Length: 389
Ligand code: SAH
Ligand code: SF4
Image (cartoon, rainbow, N blue to C red):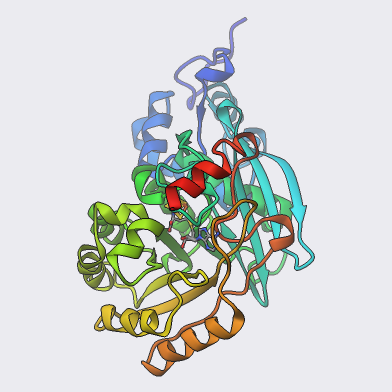
């Protein structure tokens, strides 16, 4: 059957198998323009078409080309033939007594990652995963007991934000007054995986999230947490420009080698050198030093004093994280008294030292507890204990 040829449609629509369609989610503007042109969009219309499709998908949350009413019908048909708008799938959703939502999200290949939404007064933070598992083996981290299965694609990373907005009903309604409070107002790359070992996909995904004609999250509301992949830190400043958090967790190389083994590759001094340049390169204000409080391991007064000495001169905030225990974890959380005494020393040295309130503990949604269901129990407790000891 012949389809009518119109101005917009230079290639006749053909039925392509699903796998041959290009998923638009996660493509940067440049990639989308190239793909639209390759599908027959006239070169000179490319930029305009990107703008239109982009707004539909990322501003309005539309998933069906047929609804893109400012595009000619034939062009919509062409898009539907050649492209798809596919998000990962929510498999289960658990809601904690404190309102935290944990989503188990299935990505292509049947793998699963977790995404956590943490509602707060007047705002809300989405904790996004960047890998299935992690190549690193931080001894206090549940994800660290799971091997890396694969990197997420940019689409799977952006998709986590879009899924959360679907679930929270957060897409704008045409004609409704603009609501300035956003349910998902911030993103933290603190879910499963080491974002700087999946740099390109994370960068592209964050570019999509930051785009002002779409999801529109400012770079100041995005925080990337790294265990300390030193060679990628300057690139993060230059190519993403988001806020940086670093999993510091220890004040001597001896202890950090055990807690955050990447320290054997890039030690504390090397890491601090890279961090010193970050605020200038990224034009951001300060770096967050994450410090997990482990009883008897890294929580002494001497540690607190060493910590403030080490970071002197770096604009910083120190985020104390009470250890979130998981079944078989080889550590215990420091006592509240110890955490407060530690915080006090830091505060008196002139640093903000908020103690992170654990959220969603009843559903194992707290920081560092995430692990994909399919991979649970891959390493035995004995194996973990052997690595720690
Ligand atoms: N891979 C990145 C980001 C994911 S982890 C990184 O390591 O920074 C996000 C934060 O949670 C990190 O600071 C990590 O060290 C911390 N974390 C991991 N396991 C934890 C646990 N069981 N309790 C508290 N914090 C934990
Ligand atoms: Fe990986 Fe971060 Fe967990 Fe370390 S703390 S194992 S880098 S996810």
